[in-house]
Length: 213
Image (cartoon, rainbow, N blue to C red; front, side, top):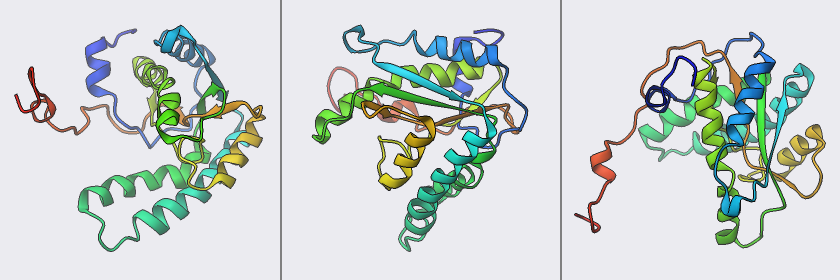
């Protein structure tokens, strides 16, 4: 992974929402996608596909759709809740940066799956999970090249909060009907430093041999 060890990449890859406008080299984007395709998939079906967007006009259109759904869901919904917890407010306040500035990203990777998600929610969750090992590879491979990323799911088929916004993104990308958007991942050189993300201590979420052990 270049000059970054696997350990360092795992322990310092955090959501980088503030990205510089500098263009991302084509060979870095190609490397990131190749790394994504090294991920495991159920039955080695490899049903994924990736749309890489670098055209500012395309990115602006995606950003407009994301802003629409983000303002409705995050600004007017989650953050307007009088009972919101401090931790939730902190997280979603940061998320508003992408709502307001996704259209300024130098590149966006859009992971997709061949097929449409089943209506059954239990089966649907399994369908979408097929892409997320590849998504994690995207985040780590980008980190190895000094590029920041953040995983977004609004305006995708995974989180159809406002289906019209998802339809707009699908139209911008020219997706066939039988292809599903699973995420949006802006990519660019980060404005801030790398660092260990805040996570619960592993001891608090680990059980040995039996639950509670």
